Amino acid sequence: MTIHLESTINGRSVGINVDPTLTLLEVLRENLFLIGTKEGCGVGECGTCVVLLDGTPVTSCLVLAGDADGRDVETVEGLAPDGELNEVQQAFVKSGAFQCGFCTPAMVLSATALLRRNSSPNEEEMKQALGGILCRCGAYPKILEAIIAATGEGA
Amino acid sequence: MKRLKQFAYHEPTTLADAIGALAAGGPTARVLAGGTDLIVDMKIDRLPTTAVVNIKRIPGLVGIEDLGDATRIGALTKVTDVEESTLVKERHPALAAAASILASPPVRALATIGGNVGRASPASDLGPALIVSDARARIRGVEGQRDILVEDLYIGPGQTSLACSDIITDLVVPNPSPGFGSAHVKLGKRGSGTDIAMAGASASIIIRNGVIEDCKVALASLGPTPLRATIAEESLRGREAAEEALAEAAVAAAEQATPIGDIRASASYRMTLARVLTLRALRAAVESAEERGAS
Image (tube, rainbow over all chains, first blue to last red; front, side):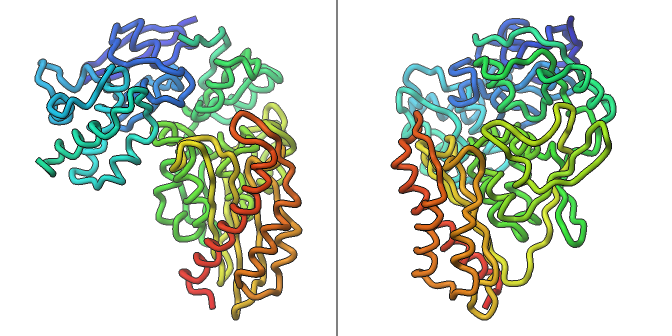
């Protein structure tokens, strides 16, 4: 059995037939080869699989493929469509806000979503927004520094 | 990747079709709401599942509505939307607080209030808050519609009194009486929410002329279901809302707790938490009542 999805992925309309037992994470990585989205725990606890669904960060490992139909999905690949990094990504580079980089797509997407909603969040709001994403390297201070820099504060 | 095993997938567009698919699928057919519990249970093989009935194409199950004397929250309303609702914050501080510390933001954006209730986790954040707010669940099943107190839904860990083909369509929370205040507190390992509760407590209180007229306490992760601490409640009725009374009630609440020890906390530590969190919830509920104008 397959189901048909018509979704907007990184700004492009995508029509695709998939097995309904796949998760959005699997569709992105294996059917669409968008491997910037990572699987860590696979059960919604680590947050590395975060993508933006209609603009909101969600754990894509817990979304069944059928629920992506008709929705707008944004992955880390969509943040720099022409190779031009967005302001959050640039700030991450400048601050060195990563070590292994595995959580970076989720961190960058969540921070981007936060800044779209609220252009001048305070530190507590930043921490809350990233609260679901684990960085095993413990790069949190640099990540916070990067997001503060991306808001134009502390520069 | 952790794969899901094969299952039949349904996307009904009416409640009748959804109930039909559940009835036909039998006890291993599951309702898919937000998926944040169901998908996990399927991935780790905790819940045998042969059919998934995704109810998100059914209209009318999302949204928070002022009914005048109550607040109706559609079962598919996201936890994020419960957390951010002005109506919920004004009327039911415990529920807003519980929603704000349930899991993490990217999970709250998927998880639904109906799913959280239907999952019947003993560690539920919303369950105790709904119980102390006297919430009812509206159920649609083969035999039509009925309302049931959220408290009466829970019969064991992961078990509700609902039939396999029943669907929770709404949560209806009556408006609080004058002098009402409520609060929810939780302790998890990862700080500000995010993690499953080692223990949690909700309290609601009605204070008139400085005296506690009524009070409800419900505990999370301290028994097989979200648990009413009825002895604590009884001990507070008719007393002044002072620290000594709250502290005695907290001790009584711990005596009614029947926690297990597991990976998150030992049973004895949970007993301590039962007292400490009940006390914190009661203090916060009194504060909430005072902020809302109780005297």
